[in-house]
Amino acid sequence: MKQNRGAFTPESAAVQRQMFDELYGLYSTAVYGFAYYLTQNRGDADDLFQETWLRVVQNLPKALDRNKVKAWLFTITANLHKDTLRKKRVRKLFFFQKKWEFEQEKDLAGNTLDLRNSDKTYESERLDMGKALSQAMAKLPDQHRLIFILKEMVGFKQSEISEILGMPIGTVKSLMFRAVQRLRRDLAGYSPR
Image (cartoon, rainbow, N blue to C red; front, side):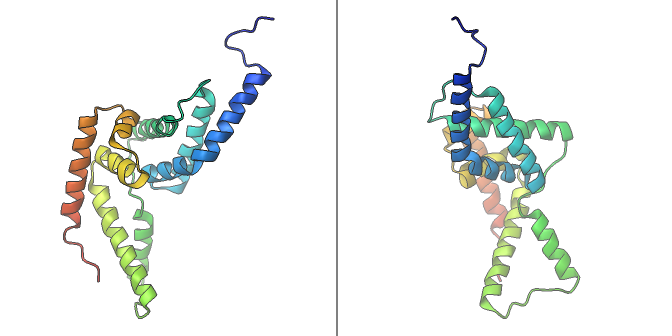
């Protein structure tokens, strides 16, 4: 019996399901982390994460190059995020912004941290560094921040970032260099208590 080329047979549907399950098991944590870095918001990250996996289900190829799967998943996530930003035309705050605002409100209300305990001092310094990094990252242009996150926080090579974002590797290197230089400049004055 001749099968329709585009039709799913129970056999191919089972193979596709198995491929999806394997991809999800291997990369769901990384994809969610990337979505969270991009959106800096748990609710938006959840939406982006779900939309990414929906696109994977819709576009799962019959064969995947194991060396390029993670880049393919991150490309989907990055493109969906860019589409969302275009539609909303809203700039997102950086990762620690909400926590920093909460801490700032606590300090203004007179509920300051007790720094007598060395563990609390360490935690306070960590929050201060997080706030300083948050502010410096928020000042970066979107492409600089995205490339910095992909390289330094997610761990992609520059060639992979080039492929994910669809830009020449020279541009990726240049934007990464500028991001690092700007962060160094902005954080040069930072000194923990």
